[in-house]
Image 1: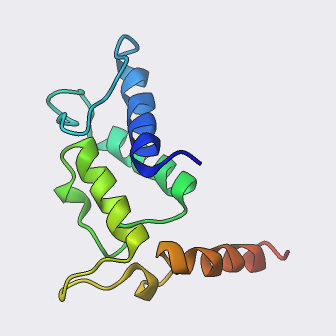
Image 2 (image 1 turned 180 degrees about the vertical axis):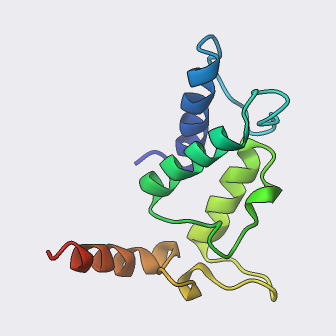
Length: 118
């Protein structure tokens, strides 16, 4: 699998190209709204695609989605969840209702298999 930065930037670029096909690259420091022309629905689609690809949701309890302003913010949010970093005010991804983070990925996959009856 591509590294986290490449994955996030590729998904953001795909979302941007839906609105502006002429855009060829996305940089981490660009504003999602001002520079890339995305709206809240576009961001929701991007986050849904990232959750499916990366199998984690840092916005469930770890990071406020309203804090996302750039692709770099998205990268940082997913990196925080995948690495299991927390502050004293935040719960670890592994402590959220659905297991998250690297250690929780196997448990999360197992839960999905059980729910599908596999």
